[in-house]
Length: 127
Figure (cartoon, rainbow, N blue to C red):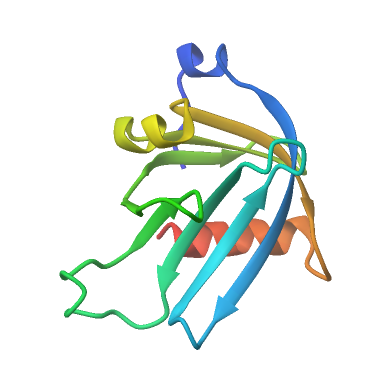
């Protein structure tokens, strides 16, 4: 992980978000889902469980709102700032989808997973 530039840090919005890891063998994908209960805004990092050359040769992860078309490779860089806060620098295309080129939020895991486990999933999905 690289560092996110100072010009980006000046624009950060700090929000607490519920985070979960989901694995859907029936849909052929896994995702880390971040949801803001106040706005119902959603940021998802998804990856196919099995690479599918028939799907346009797309490999790797994508980001989506859960209702939008996927943006492949939408994260330029990310970092863990504190124990429970993470930041994502997005590509211009992903930034237009989410309303900013930088997302920063404090996460509260949903279910039995810890913050560390959510971070491990993020790291793995973004490889």
